[in-house]
Image (cartoon, rainbow, N blue to C red; front, side, top):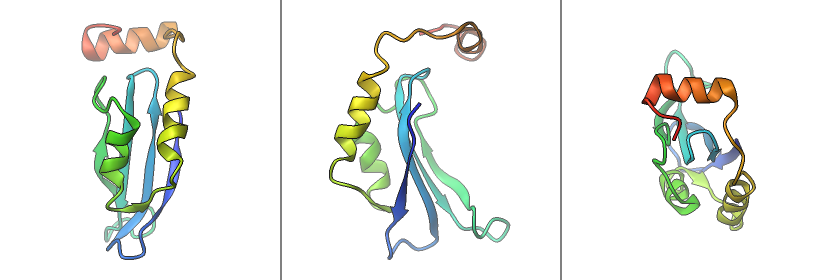
Length: 109
């Protein structure tokens, strides 16, 4: 799994954290945007969280499109994310990951 924390946009009302990355076991990119809440003013709550289902976000660009309105996106981020995804090609699930996938999704693919 890769993970990049991005700087929220200065004009991003209530955004406290933005995270994007690649999840090899789910074969998807993911995007999270955390907004301040009364209960969690500093840590925030992930009100936007996409990429929790297998193959949900298939390209780095799709994940970046989710976070771009809320974060400053480095120009080379798509290339980094794609390289991180490609580096995982051929890596198989471990015994516990495969069991969890069968339990959650009925399949390991």
